Image (cartoon, rainbow, N blue to C red; front, side):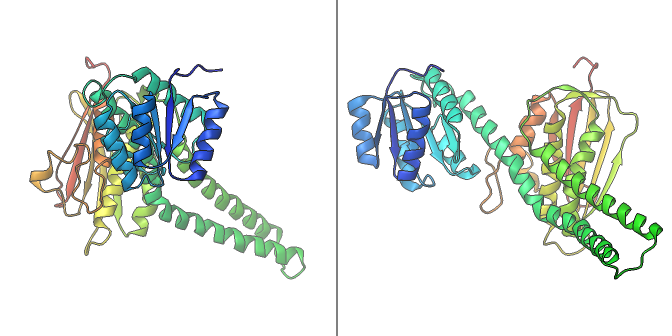
Length: 378
């Protein structure tokens, strides 16, 4: 059995269902030194009396009161590590971790996941995350929201995917009805026509399988793997996923991929995630536009970099925002979190590359990505 830190854990929880689930998880892990309470006053009293090493702060959303308690604990007891527990959504996670939580658990979670958080918290016990470990804390925030943002990207194209699947499903229903009529003696189809129906069924089912496979391949967890990769293949995979929503919004997409480009050392799924995010962002800003709506994607190279350009005919990015939009939590969208482009920036910088924005020849935005060419001193 795994060993866990030998100090008291305080569970602050206002919902019995949450408390029961967390108790079940800690029991399964063999963690016995756990005390419980609900509400601010009880939490602060028990912290002073028992001096717990970790506080598990579980609130419904977590709601306003939960975030206020989190702030008070972090300010008043910097030696205590707080793990926040709430909905499996980016917004509350970002709010809690910006207020000083060392980690965030989204419901539902397994005992193993809780155990990993507690072990990690034990290793950082006694440190003030705000003063001594701010860089690691910021990276932990970005690690969490990078995973969640991938799901957000898929969510944004899901309506289009559903529409894309509906068409071949309709074809399958028609073909099956023809076969049923033939077997019931109500249809008089030749062997040649039956063969065409069977081929149609196969084609429609292959099309659905291909759509589902692309989504699953993109969304499933994986271990990052840097390898010499074809940048054009990353672009094609992202374009295939985005095409469904672009078609639904009436947005034309053109690709111009350079031939004979050298391979580059990269994590291909991460690069695909960046391109997909840029495509869905462009679709989002253009969906209510009047007039022609167009996106172009190109690949090329200069002396030291492979170049990816994603251009659109949208409203563009104002010059005063071009140096700011890649910063964490910067957004001009009402209700926006400002995480998408900061994730893109982090991924590309982790590759030793760059990403910047300017004006496209269509008057909209043009995002330019540069990835180092392997073998050029990189």
